Image (cartoon, rainbow, N blue to C red; front, side):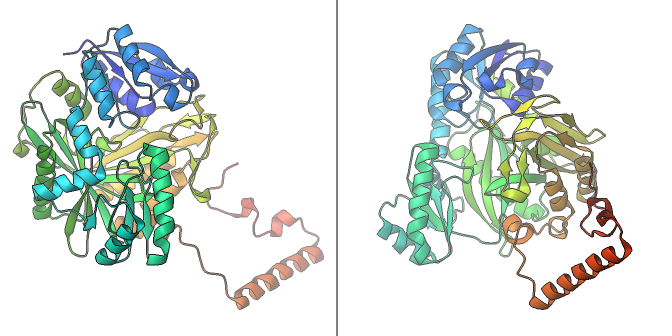
Length: 495
């Protein structure tokens, strides 16, 4: 077993990894930028090394500084967490070249699955179902011909990235050129690679992903599915397991397909195979592979009964994974909500500032993976994820009720959060019925209401005049008659 591990990340994921290390008796090294010098993960670690300026390129994305920090502190290994350099094959190779252990898959596996176009070609050869589409196109005319063959709507995607960057839905031919130009520009800025691919857009799609896990001795299994269909701007915000959509037969099929996909690239450690699922046809299609630990890994841990981070470390240290597929079954139900410092009513814009109050919910079956505490600062330099709120219960209905209660008990002052928005989602009938698709937030929850009819406007004007006249006659204060006064609105308003 390692004696010391450097965590090349920040926030809640750094603390999550540190907790696993401490339970294994392994010392930890944190790294931090100027903006994070007072961050919680720095306080939580056994040692901390300053990397540089606040911008990620000068700190968390600086490979040389990270490796130097590991060597300087005599760490045995580096855990990349997720985000930043976690899926960077060059970083994984550089870590190994420095005689350090990279806690994750091989650089070759990362490279093979890191390119969406190449990974789709690999999956087709392996017999894993893929979304109809084309890779390796360059000219606009080629994309136009491919779109006609596939049939609109189509999806333009960056070949070398994820997280919704470089992704555009095209509904008709007249929109294609603008989508190609903007997606290419965004992909170049985000990933340094402007290559795009095109595939059929499945409008009412669900996002199903399979957790895979294996060792360096050839053992590889799956740990069931996660439903991640509730998304905003192509980014997940709520995840759960099991999925209400999968029958035992479908679960076995899609799990086997995920294992085949991982074995195709000789994969080991933790990884996730993502699928698009069409509930109307019960067909599933390979989307991509995330060659790292996922933000939503806690729901799998609670239902499968395994600490994924601890086993990541053990596998990297050379241990064999002692379990077979038959050793695992799903117990109960778990849901995760990502708590962001963002304004849901204003395009989900990030919110920054000092946390004047921060009180996490507590209780049996309630878990919070957080990177913040009262008095800490949320800056504009990094992802605005405050915490992951996870609940588990004996069934889905009980888990939903527990999540509703936990969201109400989560108190954050100083920044705007999405806690109210999450309550709206969890309480919605579509979510409860398992009908939320990947575009449900935009098409249903945020759909603009049509303009009111003229007679409704006139009626509202007459009502307003009546209230004003009544107020003048009675000489009453406006607060007593104003229908918009917050004191008259029993909706949870707090001063």
